Length: 186
Image (cartoon, rainbow, N blue to C red; front, side, top):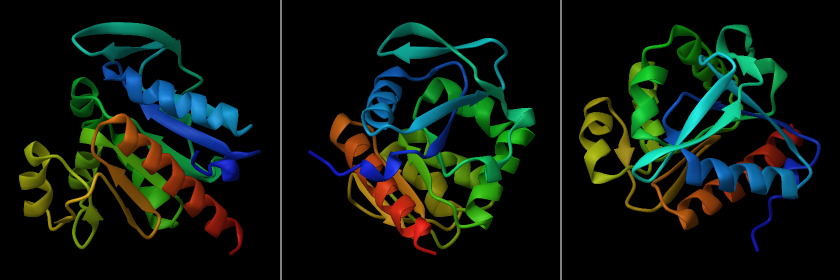
């Protein structure tokens, strides 16, 4: 069992748009709640946001806070689940970019799962970063200056990235917990 005890009492922002990877989200949700942490779903969607379950729309989840009203300072970490169906929506939203920039600028823990690592290219933050990425996403990240590490999960300071898959997401959450624990010591 992985050590995610650092989530206890922490406030985690989970940023999504309709079409996020529901399987990854459920692993994230279960892990945070099991460690007695709390999460807030932040989204540009109003009211509810919909997951994507394999080949079809999944369940609807209540949006706790709009991205337009979200400040990085209110959270201990940020997680962005994967989901090819959400990436364009997130990439084009100025508030999403602002939030991600703020977390990275302040060296707060950020976990990007699957295709969500592509968000680094939209805010010019890929250069010099080590990231895990699928073959399909690697070319754009490399062109933006990222170094692709051939592992399912990679930690570069407080930026953690993972390719898809349950073990990658579990490792991502364990590395995120470690980053939160180390940030607490500062």
